[in-house]
Length: 123
Image 1 (tube, rainbow, N blue to C red):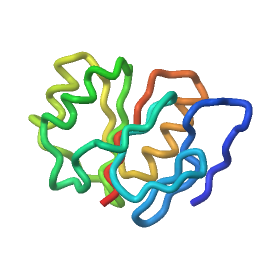
Image 2 (image 1 turned 45 degrees about the vertical axis):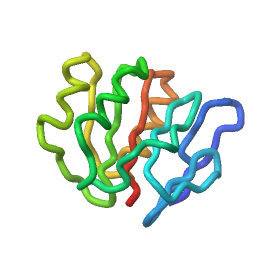
Image 3 (image 1 turned 60 degrees about the vertical axis):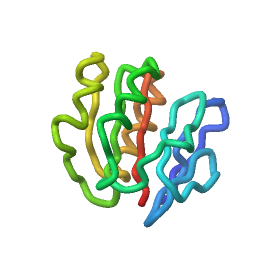
Image 4 (image 1 turned 90 degrees about the vertical axis):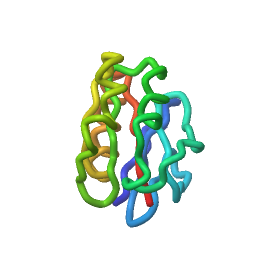
């Protein structure tokens, strides 16, 4: 699916997604990443849902976000409670959804100037 970039903003918007990729500001990414309004973290370790561990989400707790959208791949999968526990303990909201829904939701929250991050598992 292709989404449209609002040139009036200098924020990172998700401009497209499909099987095995996400586009941020028209730049294609084919591995897992974390998208924030002001930066993109391309060195987030898990590439697949099965690789997700508590330390991966604990690393996101320090990003000063009110909510983190966890895109679990092409299909919605719920992580074990101990995996999301680091975010819950730090008071950061977390919503789990498939990557497509996470991309759409991220753009909506971005447009509302919310402190959001999208952690997207691409593989």
